[in-house]
Image: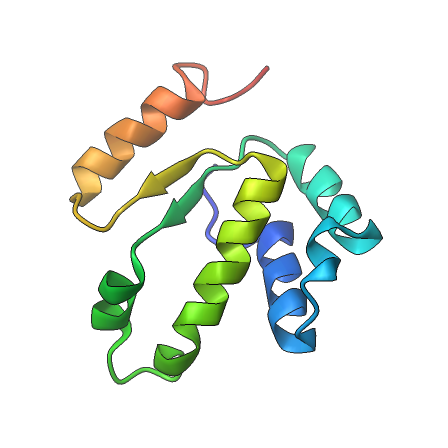
Length: 109
C-alpha cells in the first residue's frame, strides 16, 4: 500500500505546529517513528524548495514550505529514511526508483 499521510507526517505536523525541533529525536518522535516502522517501509518523497514553491504557488502553504521541508528533511535524516527527489523527475521515473528501493516483494521482510 502506498500512503501519503501517516505517523511520520503527524510528527512533522507536531514539530511544525509546536515549533519544537526536539520532538523529532525525543520520546514522542522515537515512539511515533517506531510505530510507523512497524507498518511497513517508509520512503521520503521530497523536492527542492523552489520546485515545491512553484507547485504550491498561491496555496495556503506557500509561505511555510521552507520550514516544513526542513522538518521533513530532519526527520528523514534522523531515522535514515531513503528519499526520492521528485524535483526533476517525472512520475514514471519516481515510481521506478521506488520499486528499486522497496524491492520486488514490496518491502515485506
